[in-house]
Amino acid sequence: MFIEALRPVEWTLRENVEIARGLRRRDPALLDRLIERYQHRLLRYLVFLTGNRELAEDIFQETWIRVMERGRQYNGKAKFDTWLFAIARHLVIDWSRKKTTTSLEALQEQYGGEYTFDVASNAPSPFDAITSSENRESVQAALAQLDSLHREVLVLRFHEELSLEEIATVTNAPLSTVKSRLYRGLAALKPAFSEAQQ
Image (cartoon, rainbow, N blue to C red; front, side):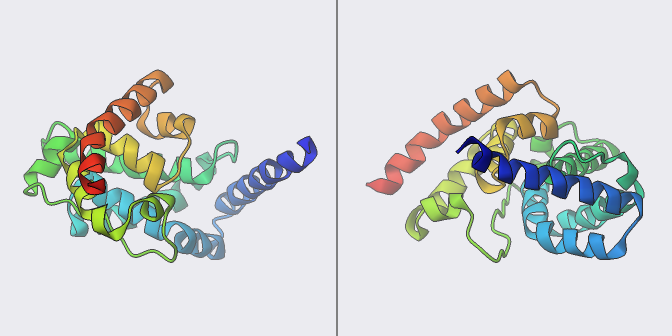
């Protein structure tokens, strides 16, 4: 049973090493496969961070350019999507610094507080499966009301299915901080879930 549990881990490690090798070779076919595999998740994450679809699309393009330019930096020890989301997050922060906004929350306020969380995807995420169509809007409205740090952790955990350790890597925050943000974010969402179930 223990050996069977290791097989998915070995496969993931092998896949990460292959991605690292392909990026060092600047393999365009690999980049095409990676874009196809991660495009929906990455764009959804960027729309969430910026609150603006056009800006998210621009940063989406820049993220893939950085992946190709700096692919040699990816060593395959961490999951590729963790590395990818960290690049995207840093690009959003760099953009926000250039525009003299001081936080992700201020960036979202700059665009009128309109939040779009749904990006077309081939399959529903576990978060979408749990929330029914009747309460999805109320949950998204509740997410939009949360502090940006709490909202980011919730989206990475439930939309993007990253582990707490991976979220800590993406956000460059200690694991204890990630756990605290997740707990507080869930606590803040609890009233929205209660209302939706009534």
